[in-house]
Length: 154
Image 1 (cartoon, one colour):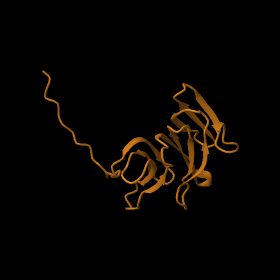
Image 2 (cartoon, one colour):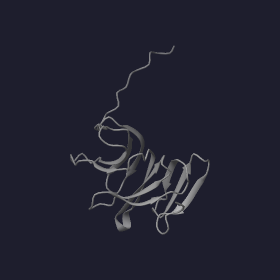
Image 3 (spheres, one colour):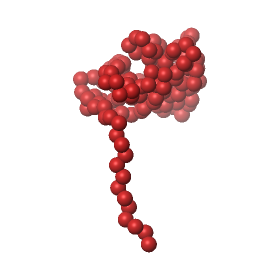
Image 4 (cartoon, helix red, strand yellow):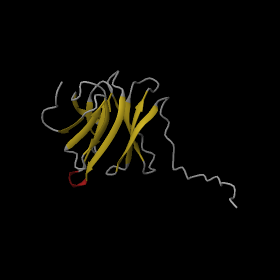
C-alpha cells in the first residue's frame, strides 16, 4: 500500500528580506557569484534590481533603483569571463529595456535605456556573450537587437 507522504525540509542557505517588495524575476551572475533579483513595490522605493552575493561572505546587496513608474517584469544576466564583464537587462512595463553594467569593481548602474516596443516589455534575455538582447512585449512581438549602438525606437 501507499505510505504517508514524508515532509522534507530543504536546507536553506540564507534568506534576503525584500523591504516589503516582491521578487518578480531572478537570474544568476556566475562571474561575481551573485543573484540578480527584480523587485517591485518595496517600501521607500519603486522597483529595483538587487544583486545579492551568494558566497556567504556577508557582503551587502547592491541595488540599482529604477525610475519611478518603471514596473520591472523580468531580468536577465550575461557574464563574459574573458574580459570580466557582467551585464543585466531589465524589462519594464513603461516599455523600456534597461541595460545595467554590473561588472566587478564598480557599483552596478544603468548604462542604456531603449524603448523598442512602445508598450510594456514583459520578458528579456541577454545572449550568453551579452552582445544581443531579445525582449517580448504586451503587443505580441519579440525584438532582437544589439546591446551597443543605437538604442532602438524611442
